[in-house]
Image (cartoon, rainbow, N blue to C red; front, side):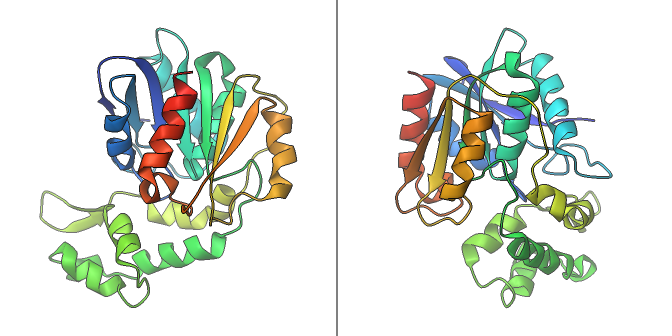
Length: 259
C-alpha cells in the first residue's frame, strides 16, 4: 500500500488533512497555505483516491491503520499530530483517533458523524454519472464536462469530480479514483464501524449550516466516543465547508489548533 501526500509549510505544529469521497489531498492546499506559519500541513490522498494505491474493498479500520502507519514512519514520527478529516475522511480520522490515540493530539471532524450517513443516493448518482462516460471517446477534459452536464448541472460539482480524470502516457483518459470499488462499497462508506473505545483529547466538530449530514440526534454518539467535543456551525456553508466558507473554516481551525 502506497500513500501519497504533500507537505505545505516548514514551521509550526503539524496538522494532517484527510479529504472526502472523490477528493484528493490537494483540495486543502489553500487552507494549508492560509494556516502558515503557525501550522505546517500534510495533505494525504486516501486509498483509492488521487495518487495513493487502490484496494479491492473499502474498510475504515484498514484505511485508518494504513494512514497511521504512514504517519508514524515520517510526519508523525516525532510525536502526536493534529488531524482534520472531512466527510469520508472525517470517518477515517475518527477511527484513526480511536484506534491510535497516542498518534493524535487534537481532532477536527468536518460535516460528518460517527453514524450511518444519509445521502447515499446522491453519491450513487454521482458515481453512476462518472461511470457512464465512455472514456475511449474522450480527447479533452471539456468533452467529459459536456458529457456530465445533463446529469450534473452544477459546474462546481462537475469540476470537483473531474479533478479525478487524468491523461495517461498514451494520452488516453482514465480515473484516478477507484470508481468500481467505491461504487460497490458505497454502503460501507456511508456506515460507521462499531468501536469500543473513546478518544479523550480535544475535538472540534464543524458542521455546515445548510448541510443535512450533522443532526441533533447524532450528538449523543459523538460525545460518547469523543467526550471533549465542541460543536461549531459555519454559517452559509453546506457539506463542502472548507471550499464554501474558507475564511471562516481557516479561522476556526487556527483558533482550535493553536490554543
